[in-house]
Length: 291
Image 1 (cartoon, rainbow, N blue to C red):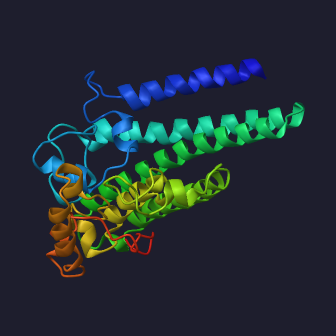
Image 2 (cartoon, one colour):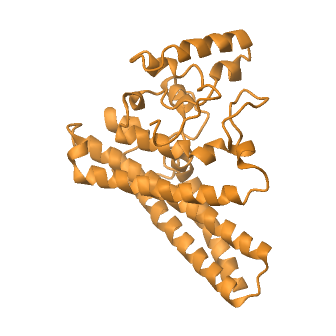
Image 3 (tube, rainbow, N blue to C red):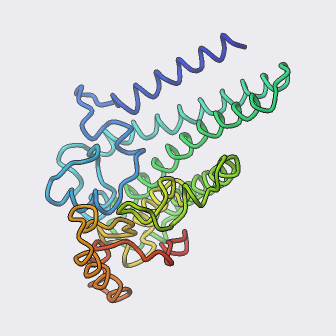
């Protein structure tokens, strides 16, 4: 068993290095064709930065450009991105199944203590989470590509488009169950690390809130499913306080919050003012209700 586990670990590391770092680009460059760029979440700050060509995160073929623009001059979805997303979904899913089989063998054939069993469970959950994210990303991009090829007519009436959205939602539901299971195993109150609450920083959430809420997963889904009018905005589901982060001035932050709060549901202005501040402490976003 030890040799099998070692082989799996080395193989999984090589798979991650190949797909997440190097990607599958045919021209030798991983620009917009590395898996990490697509697996990592993108928030409103990233989207606003992209307007002025500021890159603080790995660049990628953006969902909005696929759906509402003429694509991307740097990469082509079918040739450069789709093969990568498909391979990630398939190979990470296979890796998850293989690890679960090894875990079952270990639990059945070895005298494992409680600590060892928990470690196997955590490893399996982590690998499954990566697999589900790969499946979800592939599904939302396939939905975006279907939307584009439909000529933006009535995509909700297209069975293929709806099937891709359903696959994405199913993956999110699976991830939600894993999050709840892992939070139950924390050695601290999950609300402390992943709650929407006051902190001594410029952020209104614990450092694991993005994992707790799965906001990056839901944001991708909301954009592609056109869940609301706000989903068309680059400021969609903003959870940052850019004024506080950049300037750190309390008076300016309060003004930005005032403008944001007084334009809620005031379309189209709220599609811009949502970028100014995060929801108030008592207004944590809940998904899918707040999409």
